[in-house]
Every structure is written in C-alpha cells, then in structure tokens.
Image (cartoon, rainbow, N blue to C red; front, side):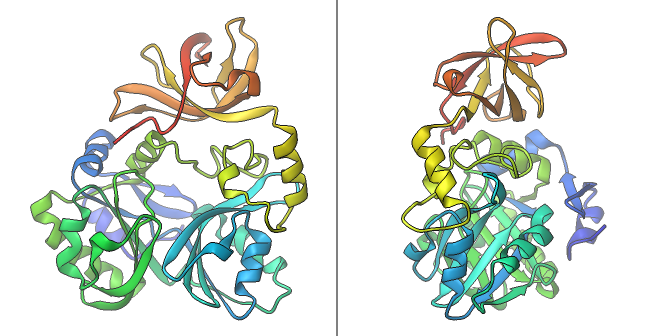
Length: 360
C-alpha cells in the first residue's frame, strides 16, 4: 500500500486511516459531520495526493485529447479547466477526469486514483500521434483546500489574486514560498476553495504554512468520508459508484460533457443513444422517512417491482435527511416521482429531486 508525502502527519494527528485506491488515506479525524460542517462554513484541507497527473505535450496533444475525451477541449484557453470523460468502446466510461490547458501544446490530465494505470494504458493505446506523455502521479502532491473562507485563509501565502481565479480556472504561481505551484478552483464540495498541486518534497512545508495561515479562520484537516458527503450533497458523480465501465455518459446525465461536434471514442453509438433516448437514467432522490440509503440497495416501485439500484447514499449532514443517487427506468426518473428504497426487506418511500440537493 502506498503512502502520500503527508501520511505521517495524518497519523500524528490521530486520523482514522484506511486503504483507498491502493493508498493509506485519512478517512476521518474528529468525525464526518463535524468535518463536513467545517468545509461548509469555514475552511478544511483534504490530502488528495492519490489522484493521478498526466502531462501531455507536443503539436498533437490537443488532437489526442479530442480523440479520447467526450468534451470539446478545443474551446479551452490557457488557464482553463474542463470536466470530461474517457468513453470506452462498449458505451461505458473508462474514467472521468479534468483537462487543464497550461498553454498551446501543453496539457495536464487529472484522473482518479483507482484508475491511474488503466487510464494511462487506455490513452497510450490511442497515442499514434507522437504526443509526449509523462505520468507524474507519483511525483505530485495535491491539497484540496475547501470552504467559504479559503480565499481569506490562503491569500497571505501567494502574490496571485486568489479571488480572481474563477471556477474551473487555474494559475501557476508562487505559493507558501515555492514557485510554479498550480492553484486551481475546480472543487468537489460545492463550498468554494482551491486545489494546490506541488512536488512531493514541498508538500509538508506547504501543509504547515497553510495551517498556520488558516488558524484564525478555523482551518481543520478533513478526511475522505466528509469529502464523500460533501460531493453527494452537490450531486457530483463518483467513479466506481455512479459511473463506471458499464454506464454511458448519456444515462448518467453527462450529456453536457458529451459533444458531438467532433469524433471521439464510440461517439457514433453515443450520439445514436442520445437521439433514440435511454432506458434508464441517473437520478437524485430524498428519503421521505428517516432512513439512510446505501450503495447497491434495490429501488422498487409502489408494487414492489425492481426499477433500479442505488449507486450512492448517505445521511446528508447539511440537510438532516437521507439522500442518494441511483439508476432507475426512464419512466420513473421525472422530478417528484415517488420511488421506494428497499432497506432490510422494507420498502421506504423516497422522492426523485433535481440535483444539487444542497443549495448554497
């Protein structure tokens, strides 16, 4: 099992550590609900250094990205980020990812930790364009500093005007005494904030300076359990739960990142699927009784007929109710539809709702 450059700090802080995507990761420190509220109301720091970073460069870098991703990366300008996915040949998704345009002919792809090797092999297998690909996943650390007080907490550490970095934009600049640090605003919590990409040998110094600068703002370390409740309240997909090798981006409500003004892997069949309509859709739902839905729970109709499956579920700390996402038959997917979640042989009423669940 791999450690991040900060594992020893998490252990010293008393974090509950568990294996995640092949890494020894902090799951909680003081408890999910408290950590969740810290991010919603102040500022918290996640170590997400397990994520993968691929650098692509050369005259055909954009062409390769266009070939393997569903979104249209041609619209990116320097300093912009795009959410996208890697479709497979069977109608499913290899992974979802972020595409950073550093400058012409130079891009950064940020992929999920559990899929680093799979994604690398997939993109490499399509690289007949002479694109230079470098996997820097083991060289980089990544801190996600999230919450409404993030700008105030971090501004003293950089000459970059943090407030000017718009959502899904980034700058490369000085941070906490180091140069060439990537400071981005993509977020996965809906609470605002930044991601700091730095070299492993800089990570501990940056972590310490972030906590020193953030102390007056109530900064706290946050584990991956709260990251999951925060992203779920926003209706953000998690690879391996809500999307995988068998779910199409059209079914998953990711038509907005699936652009048919270009050809990409399996684009013809996905376009046909979009035009014909899908038989199941990913929906968000709220429990109408006190109950917590969980991954793989069955979804049934009023007559007890199976109509789908829960992909993510939790008790939402900000809402005080059970929420979840799952795939249901299209006829049961409209907002306000009544569905039932089968929990320990009991069918519990839930209602389909538009996401995000949490409105700031």
